[in-house]
Image (tube, rainbow, N blue to C red):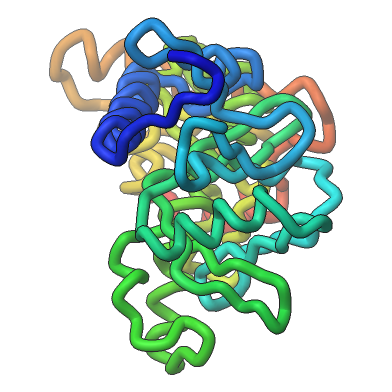
Amino acid sequence: MSPDAMYSSAEQQAIREDLFRWLDRRLEFGTYEFAREELLGYTYDGVRIPLLDTSRGIRNPREFDATLSIMTSSQGPYDDAVTDDGFVHYRYQSRDGGDNRKLKRAHELGVPLVYFHGVRPGVFVATYPVYVIADDEANRTFLIALDDSLRFFGDPLHMSDHERRYGERMARQRLHQPLFRARVIHAYANTCTVCHLKHPELLDAAHIVADSDPNGIATVPNGLTLCKMHHAAYDRNLMGISADYIVHINDGLLHEVDGPMLKHGLQEMHGRRIELPQRRADYPSKERLDERFLAFDR
């Protein structure tokens, strides 16, 4: 394609759909975060289409009618935030022109975008598809819906309390949880803190205090990287972790005879000290471990 050629509407839609499938495949294989270099290297039908702009937060391919992706870096200059209404409030670029016009066009056309949110310099999590559902010209801000259902609210600039609660819940599921997962699993170096399994596709970021609890904030000290089995045991309080970082297994399970999975996967973990993050600031909170340990079914 020549530098001045435009993709047709059908081609642009096909590229967006292919991009979502590409991201889906990466997530299926345990890729929970994306490096800038691989996002710059995305190709469609042999043509490289970078997903990030090297100098701006809005990616507007010249051959597209509307924005393809938006980005908030981990140390960005713009005051973008997910507020209690569940939307990303994405500030206009400082200059008027193509950047803002193509995002306005995305709003008019209702096309889906990708939102890349920085978790640390050069590394992002992806939320998709997202939609521009309002253009707040008075505040020079676009409202980005993180869930398709939010597109059908009556007036996103004047929401009811019920709509705000719903939007906040969707934002927690679509954005806050992936960010929490990326930060926790990175802190534990892609390793289950209990059994040392190192396959990201088999690992979860578990809350120590549940996110539904007022103390269950989505920060690394309230998280543990656990494999699927140990996460299930922890959620059901059949496995506990005390404030001295020791693993405890339910007494009934310790004396049960049920094959090698139970023996090696759970019983042999009893009394083991968990693997801690490299940075002390990322250590699991002793106070939260102690609070959660009260629910452990001894």
